Image 1 (tube, rainbow, N blue to C red):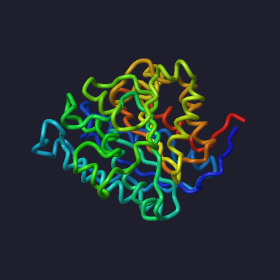
Image 2: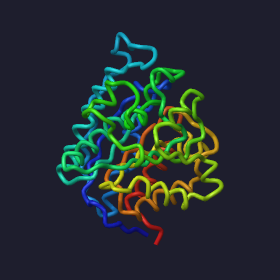
Image 3: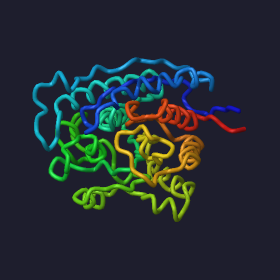
Length: 310
């Protein structure tokens, strides 16, 4: 029933209950929902040594008097949370642990990727990035129709976006765009499209998955994220999955990955033995159905960490 791939057997769970980057409230409860779904015990049952580091402190929208610029709402508060998260992620890696970050909205990825990138950069190595999402998350304050920062984190990681985020862990991009694969997109803003095309990342739309199959797309995406890197970070937005299977997400979009396609993607990632860190974001218990989405998120984490059918 179970089996663990030869990955790092020590996992540090870090909660990032941030919802300031989203337009809809509720994803700040995502880390709790994943824990309620038994994440720690189920990872331990796979043979992992699991340390739950708790949640990073984050500002609450109700306590912030001024949301700041309408083009990048709550930017200082988001940057402060991401900096704290990045420190914890880098420390976990230094302690020989695999960071597993629980969001929160997708803006937390700036902290996760920044922390992972800094740790490996200190030993003259770089990381790849596998970003699985219904959205491109490559807006900038100038292109964003909403000003919600959770639509900007991949741009920040690739060297675009607000200075407070993209330069948080040093000048230059956190990842080389040539080592970034964006998988599952099906909802890209009109002014965001040229940014996606110009940065050098490799997008795989749902049409690519429909035409080529999930296995072929994942093989190519992993190759891109692995070429010349120490490994890759997996950033999984649960809206990558079709809302039929994951209804409790911040911004659901029809036409996503099926239940089995999502598991296959995680299983192929595990088989590659190239994942060095992982995060799961945008679980919103407020609009979920009896914690279905959080439970699926835990299942997908287990598949990425080595759970097998036989």
